[in-house]
Image 1 (spheres, rainbow, N blue to C red):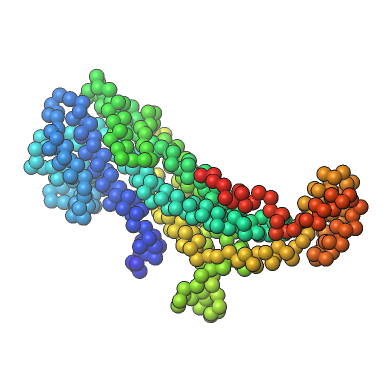
Image 2: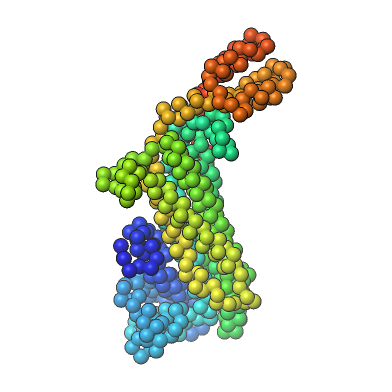
Length: 464
């Protein structure tokens, strides 16, 4: 843990984000830019342009090797942007620094005579757009989705385990009717499964059509080339081995429309809101003594109250989900908007997309950790349910109405509201009703522990 880090993602949580850092860090973004530039060189070679000697298989391998950047390579690119390197002054431009790096790297190779084709007809936003799409796709596919899938499975497993564990449901915070703990957990597992299905189908777009999206420079140099088809080849190349697909935007300004970004961010936010809801419910169950947490030797809950076992994992997840969602909501509002054909107010915002993913991933990990430490107190839940026989009022008035009994709802309302009901009082009420024998038998059979409808079946059924 870097104690000097400004951001908790690089400090306190730094050791938990390896999967994300490998695909969404500044180094990963730089590597994506290098890959895009090299891929474009290969695409140009396939067009059989005049004065462009086609790449040999060995040269294609050379480009593939260049895309694997060492720490020294990354330092050179940084120096080219900020400090200057060898005879090249500081570019103060991140994409141009990548181009100059490739010129240096490929100098004195068989590609020496084709270096002028690097970054041919491109604007920096072409490179950035494709690279950011790669980062988002990789961050989703290799970090967020695996964590969310594992979390959803944990919730479904808990739902099945506690499918028969009765629980007093509360609506408006007040005793309502019986349910089971497993069924209430299944609600979250099901909701999350829907968002996962949508996330798996996400397609991220990028633009690759020059300064303002018209292929102006491309056509000026080679008017007979089908440049849109060539640009689509970038998506084909970048999609190899990828589950989350990239697609070329056929119509754009200098920047991609980024509607697909907003769709992704909103999808993640929906999943996060579901988990936020879950964390708050777990907090309530723990507070009510219905869910207990395992203790760890030496762990401190409070610096002054030794007995405390705080729901820290669910609280931590709640805070980090809110941080992630605040950023994701900003991205959804900001990134699809650009003044006329281009403005740079998005640049620094784009650099923080990994931050939102990072807070989301930390939150998912906290929820999963919290789930490993909890146990549902079935005895306490059953005892609470028995102390509220009034929860049978719904069943009783429905049975009475079905039997043709007049003003059933009103009579149950007047009997149950505003009083502490006991089992003895409930039985006395049932026996005093002027109903037929079959109806009285149904009413006598009512028990809070068995009045759970299809809760068990819902908890056990598969919806994902």
